[in-house]
Length: 442
Image 1 (cartoon, rainbow, N blue to C red):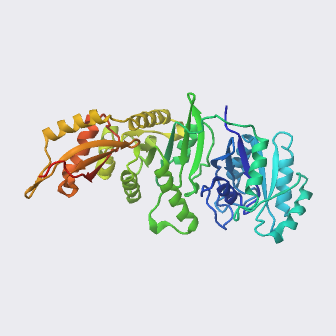
Image 2: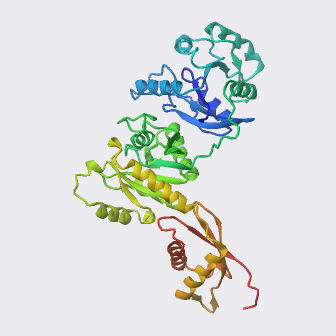
């Protein structure tokens, strides 16, 4: 049984993204005065009482996009309407009924027998604006519901009505098997890759750089298992960020990395690794995220370099990502996309493993016997015991007499030895050193 889907639609700048963020209780969609910021379908799970639903923000109907993507945006809106169990039509009480509102209403009225609809008059930010709500009766879509996304007024009443019109989902497992962030610089094929995984045109694909602006959650099922793939805006150098929209797009991408279980780092195999690629690799490595390096557009590489040689090239250019396996894909033809998702799932399963305290300390004893900690001046560095505190990625705490007595090269040795002994190959484990007073005086 799938979650009920609520499509949020309306003309540009009526507050659709703000309303989604208000329902979700966090910033999911970018909010900016510039019309047309939202292009793809941006979704979030929202729970109200015993109902869990997926709310989908859409681009503004009737927007004239500066990058000539209006037809693409309109098609995404159609996809959202086709997959919706309920439509939330948002209008702006400050502007009153506009010609474009009437156009949208006509479009939605044609579907009113197929999909339930609620008309929400947004931006009722103070009581003096309430009388303007009644003007929207003339759209012929029922009584408008007043709400203020910014102030939160009317939000619970609107959520209650929405939940009553969609079926209850109590007891449904809403957590996906894993969250996968698809990241990379601009035009490496991220959106094409996401569409290939979902087996449908789920996000807009265009040659225009920066088409994807939000971190877009795409939910789909494969082999009976649910996944969330997060399509992200292309990372670029800080000097290339021109406005607030691009700035927040970059912030969303970094946030997607943090909340992902596995990161698919797409690279354009037909081009050299850039400074932006290296910087993104450092970000992933520093976050200790399970990662797959995806050499996309392999069909354009010209066959001049073998896969092993290219993998070595990546290790040389991005040494911090040496733990990450490499796959070679052509997303345009869906080549090896399923292999990539299978590998991501395998890594996620391994990264979710936990070593028992007894097993871990037996391993530690063997590691210390092979290479004891170094002596620093007259004080010997000592390790008392270790424990695993979390998974995905695995984090270990090693209790010692003096953390400063362990140089970086020994810390790297210990982490690599633990990774090998505990079968965490290709998994970025983290080892933390904490001071513990010895039971005996030194």
